[in-house]
Length: 427
Image (cartoon, rainbow, N blue to C red; front, side):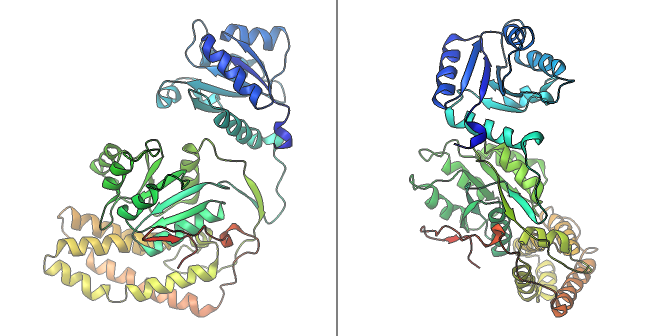
């Protein structure tokens, strides 16, 4: 056990005797000390009148008299002038969304769903203690913290570029990644009960089997009923979001991926995430390039040489789009035009080709909604030509160094064994 977690004391307040007994046994099994009370008022009595000190306070939300939120606010007020305030965790069998909309919920450090297990409590306390500023050692220059060490993620997308950028981004945070190129192959992976998968990132639009159908089917698999599934989508339409939720998906992550938003969303669905780890990392030098957000691109891809490789692949793959797409539109081949612009906006977004991603998204929306595309073709072709020129210019500068030494971007992927899966280091 981590040295910081060997001597933890908890104050537990719950009005249910069975729950109190179970929590007391759970805490004891972790080697921690606990005091158990049956109300918020009693919790305050031990804290304020008896002057007892606890590292963590675990409160039931719904209790007679002073409920968990009222107790939490009273504790925060009591410790307002003190250097350290205890960690406060709220336990509830009710909706977390409802709780988080109540006044004072922002004073709660973390919410756990009942029944509280030993692993969920341990990992919650470990994570919160690590995050408390007074416990976190300052990072040295060139260091950063891995936020997903040891987390097993299944990534499902039909785009090689999207798979590569998301895989590298997740690996740089310490995750172990398995990839699949459609829903059918994702199900083959999920059907193996021996394979650990903590969370699924699922593209919505894919050939063979889309993300909606794959999610509906995975919910029927033994042991996968509660596995978090997050939709990867550039769509913002209400009907798309409703369809995702109806299929059993838990949440949405927008494309192109934003690192901080992605990690924050993942951590909401990974209560058992282990403590972050510190690794060495060095910034990658660059010069600005028209039409390419190099800062975001390098941050997402980690290794600049790999980023350049995929920029070149994008340039080569879409060299003929300027001719093909107008032909599709002129011949009313709507499905082909929609599919092409969908892939284009996804690839451009993943590579931080900002102008191409934006105009491709507008064009894709117009095509799918049956709107007028005549005013979008010219700016689309201009943005595409400009991006191809910028890629050639940037590649010619020879300013892409090797990837940062010691970063998680170079972690080997766990080999995949299922059909149609790829290890996360594959190109």
